[in-house]
Length: 181
Image (cartoon, rainbow, N blue to C red; front, side, top):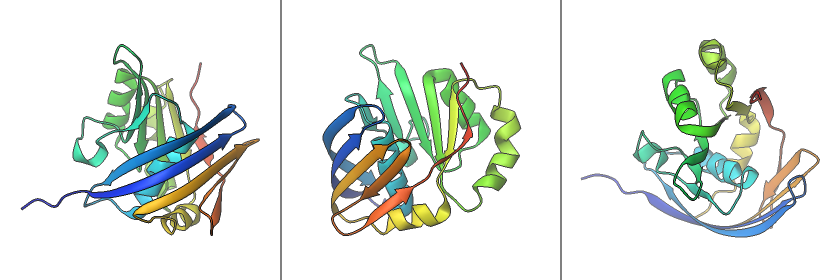
């Protein structure tokens, strides 16, 4: 018998002063049985950092053809493809071919090793951005995970804070590769 996804609910209040985006999102997050709370919270962070009316959670781990977070335009074309973790270079390049923009959020203590192995193979992808979240930060985000969450995300002058009423985590993302025009 297959294990079922665990459902998490999050009320996410976003105040992104850098993009002038102020919105509340009621999120339903299906956590795959093989997904950790840490990875799920990085998906929530990715949603908050790229929030728009078109942004949704993809099937991610449940479907290898689907991104973790995705934004499609009105025609169904993919505007933004977001991967979480350390995808292989073939998956990244495939995403770059299918989407206008691709962002990878890596979060492990071995992210630098992963990037050293695949960086030169994906360097030609002009629509790719790779961002690393420090391992201690992702572990602090993991502690925020609850079945029902009330989260606030504030973004101002490149500073990011994500938390609930009790704990706030400061996030300092490191851009490993920026999209090139």
